[in-house]
Length: 151
Image (cartoon, rainbow, N blue to C red; front, side):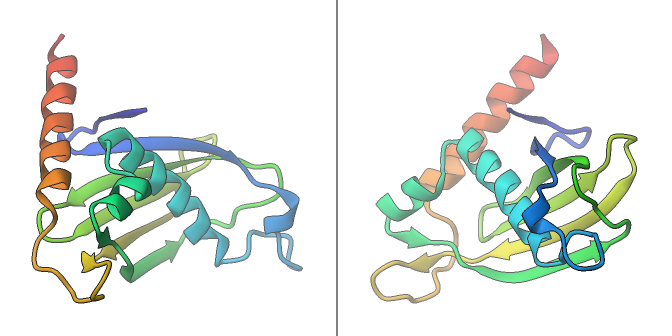
């Protein structure tokens, strides 16, 4: 479910239970799986906006991740329930999404950011600016969420 955060930015949260196959030999989640958790939240955010990966492909624009930062604060362990949030920071020129992973007690275990750039699906050339479809979907979603928040 998509909503507005305290700064009136679009955000979604996904609950995840850490599965056995994500654990490394040290008994904690292998660092690369954090990107998978970010992706699950990002996909939910894009679905909520109405511009998911299928719409991206249909509009002829690909959005490769061009930059990632992750800060590991607390290790995640087997069967731990976490809440992964994805918050849309920028969308007019590129997609910038911030993430937080918190545990059952509200402790931040990890945070990060991804940057995605629009690329023409046929030529693979970098595009300047997001497609109008994405911008209009984000603006409509922001307006709808603002109306729901004031009710």
